[in-house]
Amino acid sequence: MVPEPRRLVAELLVDAGAALGEGPVWDPQGACLWWVDIDRGHVHRTDPVTLGDMVIDVGQPVGAVALRGRGGLVAAVRDGFGAVDVDRGTFELHAPVESSVHDARMNDGKADPAGRFWAGTMALDVAPGRGTLYRLDPDWTVTPMLPGLTISNGLDWTDDADVMYLIDSPTGRIDRLAFDIERGTIADRRPAFAIPPGMGDPDGMTLDAEGYLWVALWDGWAVARFAPDGRLDTVVDVPAQQVSCPTFGGRGLDGLFITTARGGLDAEAMARQPHAGGVFVCEPGVRGREANRFRG
Image (cartoon, rainbow, N blue to C red; front, side, top):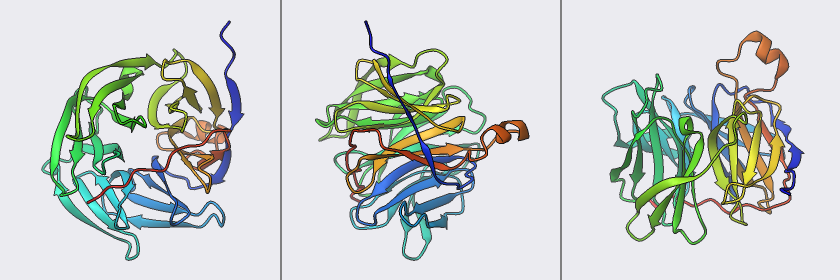
């Protein structure tokens, strides 16, 4: 008999009211959580102890950020990739991508174990196959790696760096690809497992220290932990419908921080989830892994 999954409940950390909160990443040096509000072009720095929240406006939609080895952040924005100076609160575009048209934008992204930054695009009208996954090398060279996506979303790598997991949300599944860490190449894309019907659409994702996948469930009010074979292990209930991305953080990497969105919700929906767009947190009983840094 398959055991029932554990059920946990996330609590509100910051009532941020984000239109489209996404891409949380824990900064151990600053003891803070960086995350983005995509549509507003805001990069947030949240202190989970004081609950202070600083905002940097990058001037255009921002899909994801990652820590840089030399300090500051690298960001995937509508027009490409650039650097965020967190001390000055400024942004500079370094590598334009699809910047001649504004009917698409960057979505989720993450740094790989070798210090490259990966992020994908999506059409604003969610046209099928319009998205592409890009790789940004430390010298700011951009390479298209996987075309034909619709909503390029969560991604992460196994500890041995042999596998990259990737989500294209409308497929309703998590895919796995063979990853060559030396060359930064991917191959042999195939389904790893599908999200069970009725649970929501897979969005952002992170792996924990045991190699299990934590997947945000958009329209599913939850984050779910899956074994690599797809077995459902844990469900974290979130008091917000549009759950976008989880990440581990805190001093022991034992807290699970979760971003959500309120964009598109009507008055009736907001009455049922007044803290939609907030950042939530729980202690799931397992630890995460320290975020990779972009070496550019």
